[in-house]
Image (tube, rainbow, N blue to C red; front, side):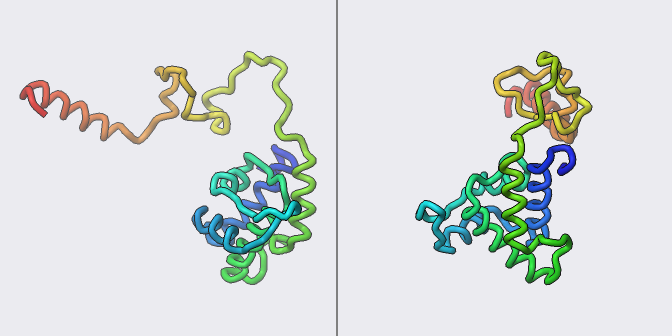
Length: 171
């Protein structure tokens, strides 16, 4: 991911690695720990972070806007990771100054890759990174079959039950 997405991808990869090294704590536990830390940001406001925001950082959808919030999350994750493995698997993984440099680079890098020249071009169904199961209000069709899998048995059971209900006239 890091190579394809530049500094933002590198940040996301490193954050996801630290999160894994910390034992993949539940997002709620992370947000509660951040709120309990009693820290304030550069503006003097209490540091808070939502579970969605932390999830977005981990998945590379976003880069934190303020380092104070990120630092509080990092301190919690680094503490958990150190308990599990005293030596980091990657140099600088437990170092807040290394994180600050990585964060600055990610924040300064472009948010997304440039748009393709042909704006009408749709990503191919074979490109897993472009495959999103939610299409908004657009209808699903046969071409979307690759998005859905693993429900064949449940579908057969439902059809059988519906057929049985129609035959017996009940439910």
